[in-house]
Image 1 (tube, rainbow, N blue to C red):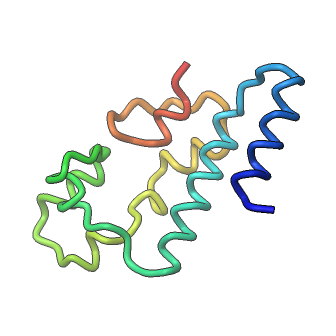
Image 2 (cartoon, rainbow, N blue to C red):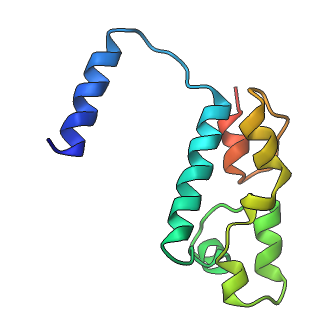
Length: 109
């Protein structure tokens, strides 16, 4: 069975349960795990190139694009050491308000 078919069946089976909101801290943990998994296979996209292509960056990622650092540093995941990630993974309504921060997006409304 293909992954797509499996997910379609899962969605159909869970739609009968009713719409439930996924907890913000679960979204944050999943996001962290996915980005860590991507980093295992090689360097991430360069933050400077991401920003120049119109990608949204948080204030800390943006600072890495203006500081004269090598591409190797700009291709790492600064979220791994960010306090926003720690808060987001542990609180349901984390007080994170930085534009461009994916964790902030998970904790809106």
